[in-house]
Amino acid sequence: MTPPAAVGHHPARRPGAPGARDAAVVLLHGGNVASWMWEPQVELLDDLDLWTPDLPGFGARAAEDWVSLDAAADDVAATLEALPAGRSAHLVGLSFGAIVALRVAARQPGLVASVVASGAVLDGVRGVAGAVGRAQLRVWDRPWYWHGQARAMGIPADAREVFVRSGLAIRRATEERIVDEVYRGCWPDGLESSGARVLAVAGSRDLRAARDALTTVARRVPDAVVRLAPGMHHQWSAEDPELFSAMIRSWVVDGVAHPGLVPPDSR
Image (tube, rainbow, N blue to C red; front, side, top):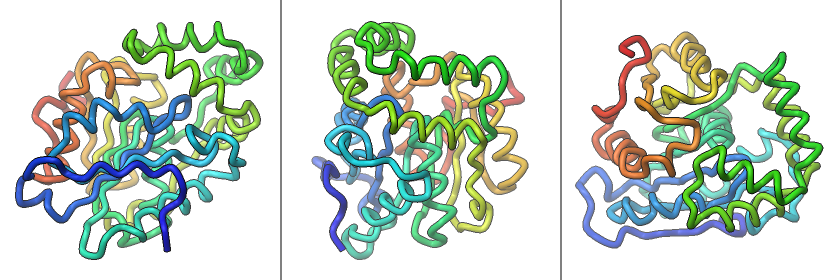
């Protein structure tokens, strides 16, 4: 089986720690960007074997139809199954990518060694927040909306143009289907018995729904580790790429949460 189209591969460029040599790390992007968002991590984690796929409906695959979270998870699983023999697979996802990463682990027991899920909204989005989120779909194809989102999310100035271009390329129908599924609630049944080590993270200034999801993960997956990134917002892979990258290395290579993260009850 070959990986789907548009899977970037970034082999380790310098010798890694012993625990990194047999690990493949697959980075799954958020729901209004594409694989380009991982450029800081690709630079900072050059001792790891990194894979950066575009999910269906995004980036180089923007013309593809979005089907469902299950279909997206199976798409990622095809990438993992095509990895070189002997490699352990580790998934790292932000926001929408975190939801997909957890679903891959749940649907494919034993395939995924570990997951880092940051900002995963798992319990649905309702009330005023849900109404506001759905209202944004009406202006999804307006450039001014994307420029405003870039400023609101703290996208670095040198990445704003590519953010706007890739956002405008995402079809409104794709986002409507994703919003409908995620806003209803999207807990990945089977995660607790998947065998994957789970680190669930949110920024301490993240979306309320993302922070609340940490409680759900801790309750439903007793062995999971839950942490907050102090002072960080939702898109903190760009806000503090050094800490985000160090978190990935610590979890994948050393098997522990980075000391720069804190338990939710220690704020």
